[in-house]
Length: 92
Image (spheres, rainbow, N blue to C red):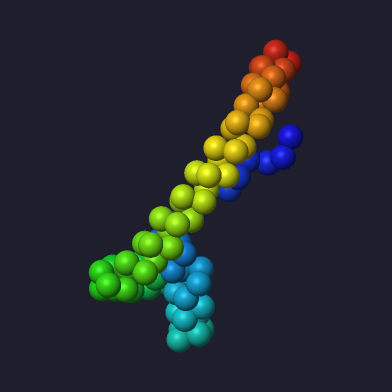
């Protein structure tokens, strides 16, 4: 059975992986992981709604794609998943 589709990223995570983390690490190379995380959160909170809307629309498109893939996965592999889960339960 193929692996289940991976859940889509949130708007914050899309921004973070595309722009945020790289920008912060470039601007502040000496920051620890904790400091980078705090700075990422601070920038996201101060970001205007117009700029966030870009990332929110990308996240909603990714969620639609995820739901489509999940629907296909469930329709194809529901029975196999049930049988696998049942066999794992009976083994333990």
